[in-house]
Length: 604
Ligand code: AGP
Image (tube, rainbow, N blue to C red):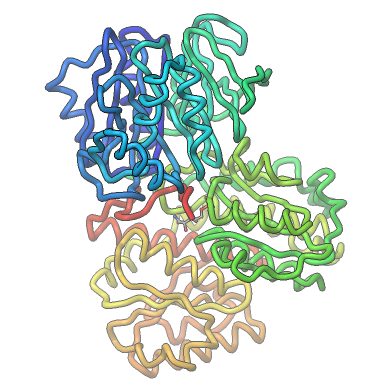
């Protein structure tokens, strides 16, 4: 995980462009940061801490140059110290390198280079790269050949950018880590001058251009005024330029205190985008193009974190329609892979880059499965590697805590199941509920009592969340959201499981958030579980549409409009997002960048 950026052709703006880009990439990691610029010689500035600390350090230094690279780090090898911050250099400070990913065979390379006299100054896997380039240069290779030869030695995942003192421009390569090239003013795929950018993600340079090309695994690029992309054999590759639709404003906070709050409030719009052109209320029909013809005999969902909770929900939809379906934690899938047969393996991922999910999808593909991704990120590795993609169209999500993308995932899963396997009678009930979803979410945002509830319970020892059926993954998600941004202990349970053990933990300091939706048997049983905790003096917060008598036993109520239970899962979750946000805010936590976490987890 980590974010890298580089640029050439920005003249005096080079340093500012790089720092600005790192600020946009800070969601990918933020325990140290650094920059290297090439002028007559290389100069580097790096520090542990956030980009703000780097800015402060840069104030006291005169870094100049019109070619540069930058990095924001999330530690994998070695603690977050100044020494371990990127860029890393060779012994002579003629080569500077930034890297996102993990070099699995770094230890034997490091031993070999150390035996040859190279001096290492960090604990990182990355530092072998500049030293290998140095070693190859000393054998008489050209800078480009030295870079290619170096990359050829590496095993693992990497997006790497290097600058080499005797060569003009930037060298980049990727394998299993995201890397995009931005074509700025005067730049195109075949121009020989102009502004060029490279980065782990488009927001890094979106203020300057929306024209991008996506590098594939095994490709190299040289940016030296123009752009040359080659494959691993050195053959030139013609790349197609794409235009991203998100504007720069969409990646700002737009007046909200945090990206997370902004993204919670963006949900009505994100859901409208997800549904646009895909549902027709009159005929209760769903249109997701050719994907409707997939006709899976079974579905295995693989995902992590919030996306795994969406996967649990998705698996229920398919099972309810009579199709065998199961959700797997992606990190566990390959340890004991289930038989695939004519199964569709679906990776759910906001980023489309999560290493555990990618590994599970690749395992499934190797075993002959058809693969499918439900993602927010056009051009992501999953998008490109899977046989099929359904976009959730939520727009960029910067806060580490997934919010609008969970809503988008649940909504898109409804489209997916309805278009592929569900009966028209189901569609007639669910389509209108989906159409009402954006308005219903807006109603919750306008009227929610979540802030008062958060005020009331901000000192609790522990928080429990319970739900059944479609509301069970929402209970798990409510707990995950609260723990990741508030650092308080929170657990989600299937409501019926509480009495099989966790009930022993319940007391007057353990508020229980209960998803009490509808008035069917599930709801009645959940009300029974609410009574169980109430009898043990636990405060109860009922998230309810008012159909059951849950309110009678609740200390607080978070209301949602009455709708289909599948849509109610999205609505109830909005209330839980707001509770988590306000508790974390009252505790003064780092909401958009919680400690120890990163937005996109590109290591297994
Ligand atoms: C969500 O709030 C988390 N930050 C995390 O669990 C996340 O959902 C997980 O890492 C998966 O990410 P993905 O959807 O990009 O694959």
